[in-house]
View 1 (cartoon, rainbow, N blue to C red):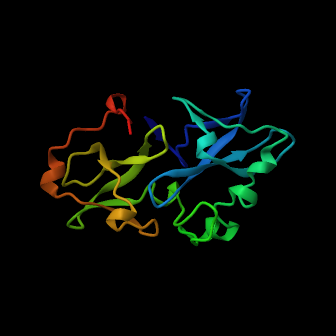
View 2: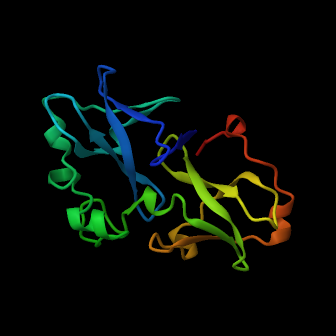
Length: 203
């Protein structure tokens, strides 16, 4: 099980393979199969490099409870350039201006940024307001499994709740400003609050 938080509450710090603090996780790139493709890390103040963003493929990332470890060092960080070479998941313009990029990118169709989902307004199947997407859970293989919703409507119990992630297969698009949960008011009224310590993120 893994849980990731991003701006404004990014708790994970990037580490190189020598366990030196090198920067922070700024975003995560996910494909239309709900699978993480890469983690965007901002390198700052190390190796005589200013603030630079790099994309580290998910299969090269190791996640622990309090940090992530990436195989970056002073000699190879250029190999992970966000907008060039084998790691060109998105164009600079696409990353800055849009939520979805063309099918021609190396990583495949419909790459989207996790920040396109975080803090979105959450609604119920009827369209009633429910709360906000606070965080996302993914398993050890990088498959997105659930969204964490902070309920804030006076019509429901306040608290933090976990729901399965309903992505492209269910008609969701990262360009949407809200995230619709296919549940009724009765469905959510009896929900127990989410406890991350009891979550098991198996495949």
